[in-house]
Image: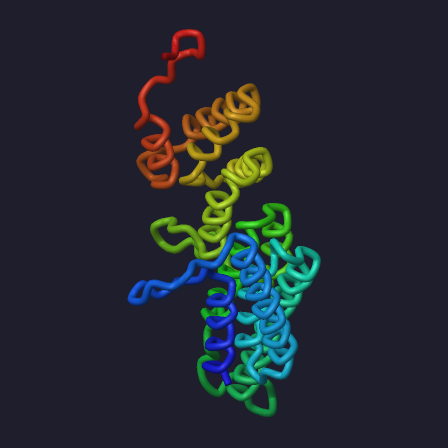
Length: 275
């Protein structure tokens, strides 16, 4: 079933692509009007096929398969039917939440199986592990939506966020302070929307800085923001520098890497002195 849906999506993409005419036989080239009609007919058939895929995907037994079809279909439908594409992105988010909820339930059952009738542990309970498949789907959902709408991507990031862990933040980050998967996804999203919506990217970058993070893509955010609002870009740059100055660059690898990234381009000349 999974292969069937993948094949159908491939066919839909093929129908939406430009035609390739054989070159081995000299034939009369169709007129521009005929080409336009052929293109319109192919698109109509492709979207009809895609509608069929979306409808039939609801019967897929595995939630992750259904979610992947919804993400791909929403991406393809965005320019043609933005309302339906948004709905599909939302449905995909709900499916990811369902996957996480099922994982928590399965984990609770496993932990209950390790206790005797008095509630004492028979064996060491398993450590909770985030479902890698659901995280992968979540990453795909958020970054795909970010190609079209930055605010929607952040909305999906928030609504699909898994329950908070009880581990201290330092333990979540690992012994050397490595970023958590959540922080890494936030930084990927920040990079994706820097060009699409620099002001929103700057707003979220500032919130990350306030939380003690040093996004590696902040230089790109500042550069993109400068094209729209030079004053706001300077304020964000000044705040970033002050945060870096207050950090210990010997122990904070992220702050050190960001400082190096900001210094790499060299001094920036005032606009009046630029060439």
